[in-house]
Length: 430
Image (tube, rainbow, N blue to C red; front, side, top):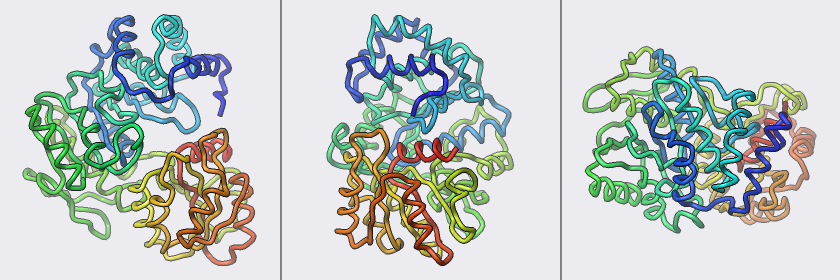
């Protein structure tokens, strides 16, 4: 997808063609670039640094909503973007404007010509320049991949760190076991800086605890220092210092109670920010985050549907995300038809396997403009081997057309498997 601003797209094309790998985990290149830029990372507001496999973006979305409900100004860096590069960078609560983004890109490009970096590293440097030059009370920083060597980890003195649930993903870069991946994620821990830890497997927890002990980091762990009790209309958050009831989050899925609770735990460890229980409760019921079990209720694809078919979109792309989807699907009480596209670097069988009991059919599609996507045929074979009735389509539009022809009872269509596919759907849907 091209940026609608031609000059911005020209800059993005330049950053893409730096003759460096798309992923090349290192801090050295970015540290050199930041030094040439006057080290803006040292002049930003206080930072909350978040790593993990699942729920990072949702956690940042809840934290942004909570801080803003409390009257604070928030900078935020997330990745990847879905439709426009601007989505990644929030400045004092607002998505970066084309004018300011262009100003920063114009400033950055000649420096990057002298000190080449990857696309993600360039985006990180650009965000730091913006965050250092505009006033805010807090910076919410999401790692892109891993933690220890992720470009965001040039931050040396965060106010707080947090690690969301860890599952198998990016094994080619982070390691072939949960313990190895967790060790990489725990690389964001800093000497004496507290860390909030979401629900983890025992292997992940042991790796995080080992790193914390080496750095004298106080961990605030789910299941030990805080937990929740699910209720029909919300959840109870229980910790050493409080027991409070909170309403169901705005974001769909049982897992979002746990993501919201992780945000509440973060706030417990930030006593310098005075935000009431009522403000936090209000914030989590209004949190927005695209392509995370998002209902599609307008646009081109929605207009193709009869009134008895719901359309949902999700960008989850690892086994943990598959388990979350399965938990949600089993509660829907109607036939579910998937439209799925995935990168061939992902374990498609592990993602789809938890969904098998709850889906009626799957239509496999390629991800547009992604050569590393499974072909529709390859993905359909994987699904068929799991016992899922499958068919092929060249596009999401064709897949929806075919499913509408065959669905005659109240049903749900879920487009899933990749954030890249989700971004394309949002763009094409208008």
